[in-house]
Image 1 (cartoon, rainbow over the protein chains, first blue to last red):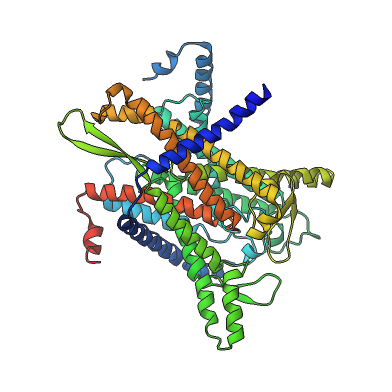
Image 2 (tube, rainbow over the protein chains, first blue to last red):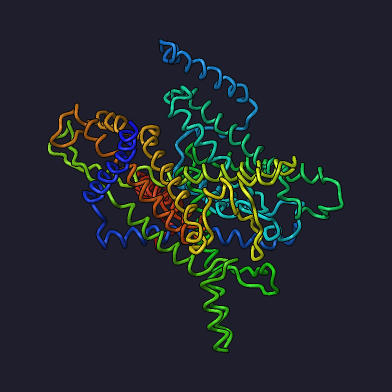
Length: 68
Length: 516
């Protein structure tokens, strides 16, 4: 009974790894050109957000001095 | 519309119905008192949505003003039990965003899971139920922020930074406590309302994910080029916050040995961001973007139009970064309530060896953090460096196993809960007159349920593996927040582009910035 339980316990991850690797193998991967295009789009968006966010944070510095 | 509920027959269903009435009625009672964001009367135009998004983001960032009543630079003096997870939830020490998005995220997951696991019977197709569901979330988030703040204050978290209060001689500063409490809870509630602005369709994406992305992006820039100069703890030196700006500043010295020392220091300093962390972040960003584009394309054809063939992509990251976020929400909640429990037990003079079973904190000399040294809490916390993770292998294994199990379990459940499971997708196909090429209509669900759960689980597994790799190396939550931030950025970007295409480029912004 115990051995059966153990078998069931190990079966799930093994099955999952089999399915998972099969899935990843079947997947369509981005080619280099597409990849760089996406990196550029996301990168520009990310940096823009970051710079605006950091600019707002810089405004905090004088306010901090005024408050505290 | 409501007979849907009363028609359910059978004891178990009736019990569920009973809970629905009771819980949602409880929420109904609060409906008139709670402030709420109204649904838009008409379609929000593209330009307006941009403005709403940017403005809410800026208001959110303004929440990082210091709490009134604390001493200057309180963030360096608070001894912090949550230092290793706070970046993930935008929790900023000693500011109004002390709790960050934690109450909102926790409340969201609690309600979604309660519905998904059938503890609660809500029909989200009904407008009334949906409203009550959202109000319930808001109420829970408010309640949680009260609990967290009260816990922090009770455990003495703010004690050594309150203005003009001496821990040893004065009596408890109850007035200051109340004042701090009101500030944190008030701002936390305001943040919840800001999130609602997003969720009611005024802005792009989901509010929580958008704020997390904004916070992550800001932190990446700040860690790199931050210009503020901070004093180091237990030393008389002060250094520039940003890793790159610190390195550049060290080039002003022409002494070769000093220069060499400074360059090494730029990669290894532990109190402020260093360049190693920055490279780990960049690497995580690149890997996430790579994984994001793994997909299986299912060939579909229209049942109405002849020869209209297309593909329907199913992503590897089917559930996005939500499983990772969920995992860390659970972990940080265990940590924060564990910390409260430890401080309550210590105040009631329970024997220290018993308290150590839960967790024991230690303050190292080089940082103002409570570091866990033993107990249950220690085994589900991350390490501050790769050396620390190698030195306690059992802890690392327990932590990794716990996170992986939690996140894969969640992803598997989530793809059924969130309304994008195999059944829902096949219903969507049917509604739009789409069918999988070479398959009969009946077998669509079967075909999809062979692909979708596998995609969700393997996607969650690969993301949490990436997150944990960063954590083992000593990312202290930075890697995780970047993974969540970048993959949420995709969602926002997609919605943005879709909306942009629908307006046909007819936007004031695009004509203003078109020349760029």
